[in-house]
Amino acid sequence: MTAQPRRLGLADRDPVALARALVPTLASLAAADDREGRFAHASLAAIRETGLAALTVPQSQGGLGAGLAVASAVIGALAEADPAASLVLAMQYVHHTSLARAGWPDKVAARLQQAAIREGAFVNALRVEPALGSPARGGLPETVARRVPEGWRVTGRKIYSTGAPILAFGLVWARTDEAEPRTGFVVVPMAAPGVRIEETWDHLGLRASGSHDVVLEGVLVPEDHAVDWRPPAAWAAPDATTLAWNTTLLASLYDGVARAAQAWLRAHLNERTPANLGAPLASLPRFQDAVGEGERLLAVNRRLLRSAAAETDAGSPPSATESGLVKLTVTENAIQVVQGAVALVGNPGLSRNNPLERHLRDVLCARIHTPQGDAVRLAAGRAALGA
Image (cartoon, rainbow, N blue to C red; front, side, top):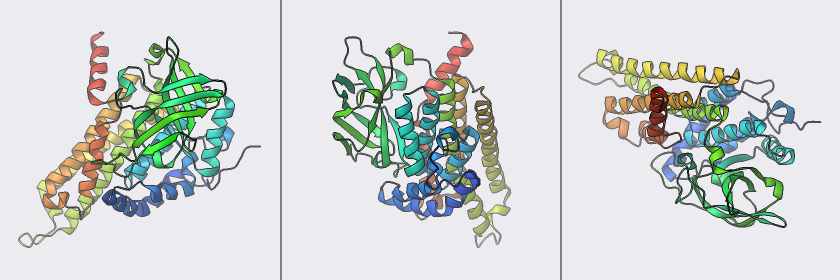
């Protein structure tokens, strides 16, 4: 008998409608969390209460088993209000979808899946390190998993660990201590002895994402919690489906930020009536043209995201090169929309009394996420030139 979701309510409710219903609450929470630089606990608690944390857990395990199209729409809607909380949720969706396909030990997979359903438990991969940077560009992690009679002991430091304060599990990227090291993931319960969070995140954007350092000091985990060990070279080719989920959800998130900025701009131009004009700014062709340019960019984004999600759900995900290009195009369009809005309205766009300056800081974080722009263009150029 499969466990039922804690407060899922998704079997007979539209997940996207649930997400949109949260927007007013999350928008006010996001503004306060950003100003104080505190983690988005309240936003994620509200998300958890809807059951959306288990959206992509397979139906066979009691989840909804939603595809990328639904997950993308949910992330995009929530990101209009709180992109930091949405980023934590996006990583949850990526990893639960990957987990269902990765062939991990049944006991380990079921533990994570049931925790998401019953408790709204969150998981994220902890990959980035001080010396290594992102493993997407190659290199061995300094984090070591050492075999012991009881299982594995894991030691290392991970940086930029998004959602660290709320994670129930960390998928820790590590290497073995063998003469010829293998690399893979170790499932680490974040409450295990030896796990420590150092609150290092003090960022320009996504200030509420809690992307702190996670320090692991000889953390003991069972033998079956170390999964998918491979020679380092075997990780070179990304899985197309996982990459499509990752790039599409990240792109959806920043597109949501841009749509929030565009909505604020429309309202501002309709409300602002300068004394010397005697009519709203929205009546002027110059402003109509600028808003139209934002609409053009957002329309392109909408088409790209829907296409990538539909192809992935149909079992034919875009190639790694195309997934990267979709992410790059959508996020650069999103940045252009927000920057254009700020330039158009002048001082109000940079005033902390308005949300536009926060949208600008948040949307610029799009360039940080793997795959980054230079890597995407290089891969596309090499493919086109047959290099």
